[in-house]
Length: 95
Image (cartoon, rainbow, N blue to C red; front, side):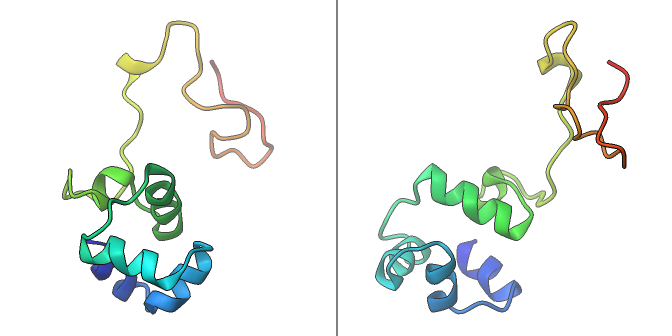
């Protein structure tokens, strides 16, 4: 998965290792499966590629982030922090 995402984004291993501030040999180990990818690195890659950690880990076939299910939001809480509702004014939506 890591190699296909890297190639899809037209990056070399060297470029990606540089973006992640790590030695190329470390990144190559992740891509080849010889090294486990730390969660923090997976999070950085998911952010870079606009996908999710679960997709990069091969746990889902859906590369797009899924919306937050209302059942995981505590009563009385807004699903999105202030300014993250997509509004242009930075104000949170009705809560």
